[in-house]
Length: 233
Image (cartoon, rainbow, N blue to C red):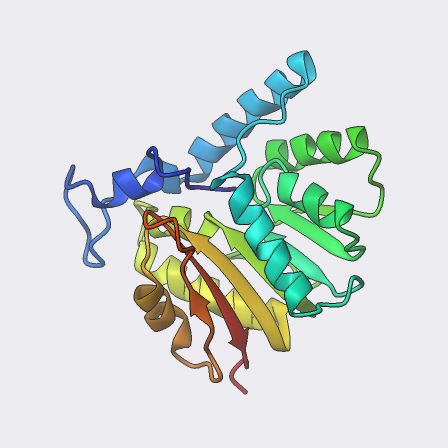
């Protein structure tokens, strides 16, 4: 599951355009927050890839991926560090990480079609060391834990638009994150619905040592933030 776009629409428009009735958290519920929507999206993208070889959308554009990778390189994140891509979608970001030399990367998505699509794309690229799993981040299996880096490019946005108690689902997201991320690991998130201050408030409760927000200088329609996180005891 992925959500977001390059400023031309997507969840940000649906969330705060004023259309519909906002919930208690200020977001307008949307189909963009439902599993049915993303299953349909990736079923279409899978067919398109099988017929034409088109890998589909790069959420937030290539520059967002490059910024995250540059940050990881600048921080000297070891190439064998365990990396989890939350809501990997078509897996294109996993491919980029692998091309830069990262060797212990996992992508999860609750849509089986997304995982099938990302598997087909990584196979086409000749990348056999990428692990892919069908996983609902709000209802994780016990095997998923111990990651040095967790990355989210739009998944938290989509959860925020779920018509069925999005506030509780966001709280569960934070709990799941605390379970899969190693102590003193890093959480890298890209959002088109949240400001950096809102993200800080959303993720800081119950955690310590949260810092390091930054906004891309040329982009004001979405935020990227990096959290060095100390999970609660």
